[in-house]
Image (tube, rainbow, N blue to C red; front, side):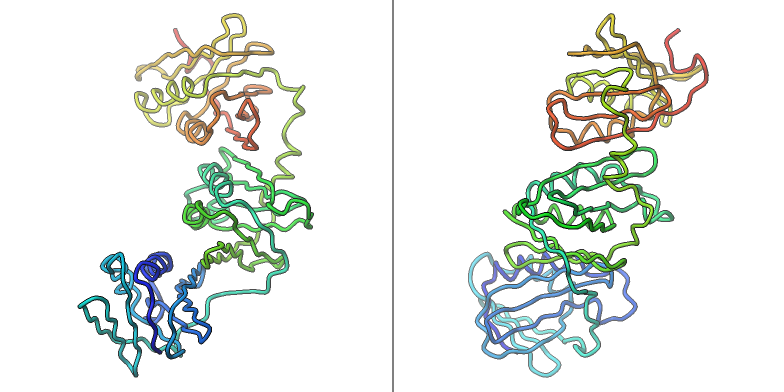
Length: 388
């Protein structure tokens, strides 16, 4: 194999696939990056850990087609050392690889290409396109609600549901839930419902990497366990193996458990920045896991926040509201869980809605941006978490 590539283009591809190198592999060859130089002038770089795979395709002058597996960590470090301009020549001959760029020559041993397992792929039956920045925004908004407990792997995932003309994303850790919805770029075509449950950490990483892409292609299949593939318009792809989504609360199920808009006991429109600041003070100054009581007072048009119990530190705060409808209501929440949801909203005005002290608090943008965030209340002793 022999090729000449632009140093900057090659470095970007190496950094992208290098992030998917496994930290602990069963076979030494898995620590490598697979290169395939094609006679068409394309070089495909691949790295995977049997669960998540990344590929990047770059244009190059391919003088001799072939395949090779090169030490991944060395190539990943090389991406930082390559000059910003110029060309790099890569030659694989026998068991050695020679790279020449500028006045530098780097020689390394190659790994056995015949032992490198192919990344997990599957035939795709549904292909839809979404805006890259909108997809990244939606993912960032919902992953905050994904669980961190690896003993409950389903709750560490995000459920992506392709249905009709929209993509719905749902995440929950049982204490809170987030749902975002974005339209397909080719929204004139409907698709049958297909759901994919993929790890939140990997989805967040891929969405961030593709956030500058104008259009992303989502390729999925309706077979359980088959991967979700996200492809950018610049030749990069990420494939993530999914968990079986049976029983996971999808967007359709979430919509069915939400009360009708007219059944809320109280609806409050509040300045987002002021509310975030007040809840932030609660998380910083109160002891961890101490509930925060939130009281809506229609007469004073205020939200009253209070934290503290017994001899512990006690903190009281008030936030003026813009609009309030309904009756006075008081419920208690974990302030850290609530703050995590408040931070992902970009709207200046948030709408808080509650049915009762024992039902979830629904937070939405007052202008309606497709994001919904629910937080479960916590039970407190009678008279606790309230001012003396």
